[in-house]
Length: 230
Image (cartoon, rainbow, N blue to C red; front, side):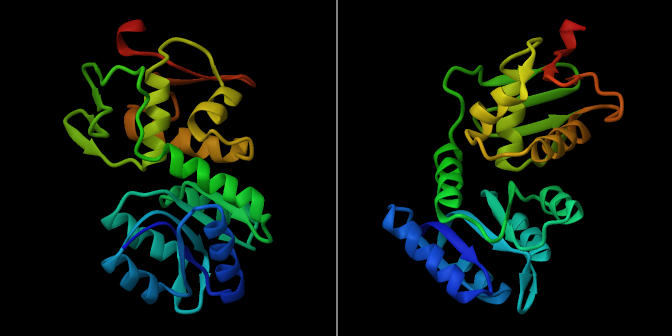
C-alpha cells in the first residue's frame, strides 16, 4: 500500500485524530505508536512523508530518524512538546526537514504537510539540469551531489535548497524568497533555514567557516557565487 503520510507518535489519540483529519482533506495517512511498529510498517508499505515524535514508548525518535534515513529519503517532520533549541538543532542535523511544536494546530500542520508533499520529488522546470565546476557537480535530475569526486548525501529538502541557490548565481536571494520558493511555507523559521545553510556549507565548502560558494548577505539573505564568478 502507498500512503501520503505516516504518523509515528505514542500519543495514540493525537496520532489517530491527526490521521483522521488528514484523511478528510485527501491526505491518505496511517498512524503507528512506536519504533518497532513503524519499521515493520515501512517494510510493507510506501509513504511520501513522515511525522515523527521524539519521545516514543519503545525508543527515541532521533534514533528512528537515523535508521529511516539509511533506507529511504523522504521528508521527515518532527513533532514534539520539547521546545529547546538543542532539540530542534539535533532534529534538523540528523536529517529532519522541519520541527513542529506540540500542541499544534491541525490546520497549520496540514498546510505544512501538503506543501512538502507537493514539493517532494519535483525539480525546478526552469532550472539547468547540471551545475559543475572544478570541485563540485550537481545533477538535478538524479539528485546527486559530488564534491572532489566524493558523493555527498543530502536530504530532499537540502538538495532543493542547493538547486535553487545554484539556479540563481550571483544574485541576492532573500530569506523570504527561499521560504516562498523552497519551503513554500510562511511558517518556517530563520533558525530552520540557518541549519540547512550550514549543512550545505559543510557538504560543499573547503572551509565552512569561510564560505566561498554560499555567502551570507547580512540581514538580507544569501548569494551563491559560482567558481567562475570569483
